[in-house]
Image 1 (cartoon, rainbow, N blue to C red):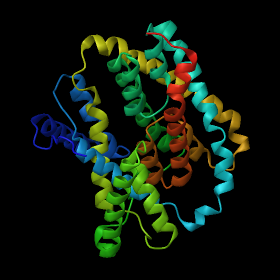
Image 2: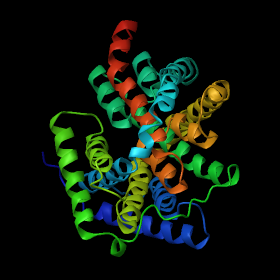
Image 3: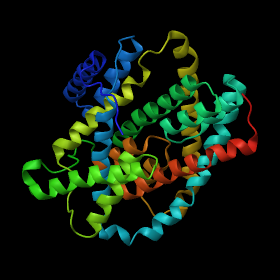
Length: 348
């Protein structure tokens, strides 16, 4: 499977320059996650200012593959004993998905004025790409769905580090991995091979989110068997943060003033409703869960699975707990979204 690369494209060059400037500024002012939030913020501002920018799909897949390996390496034999605890928490994930839909659909339909199908796929807290593809098959306003989900991912992702540092007092400056020079070369090679092979196998099996899930599963097997004993090198993780932040920011490239006033503002309203709903549900179930409050927060907030897990990784929280919940959430939405849409007999 081949993708057209934009590495030598002028739009991508602009994006890299903006991302580099953002990372430098955020590092200078000592803002949390400068290599992640800096590129995202700078590219977001530049996109809204009308500067034409683009990300590179091949590079994005590679960066997510690195994250998949890091998440898989975090699944150790010590974590296996916590499976019953995680399973109890996972039972609440469908409740959160239903709540997001019940809050989001009436909001987009009655207040924003989207048609039924566009309202439905805008409200579903699944993967952005999957919701756009599903909606495209149903004839929805694809641009509206993509911008709403981009707004959801960006706002939740920008909100969490601030809460983690100021409310929970977590340190988000800790290195996400050891320097490459301190790791055995053969283990680095195994992780690289695991990432590529895991991605290709998941892609061949048509597993959603193959660039993350495939490497994560294969590396987890190697970690549990004792073959892999560390995460990807610090340098690789920084590069992954940089380009994932860039990818989030350029999603608003080419946005018109009308779209900014209507769709993005509507997306911001949905984010407020979604966050309030999530907080209410988290407070309601908190006493039933044997997990740290920050872990529960990172696990149930409707952000991107890669981005939320990256924060968990850097903050030193329970990565396996967080990743498992987001994977289940996305799986539920992908598996049942079209089925439920057909059952409800939604119209354009």
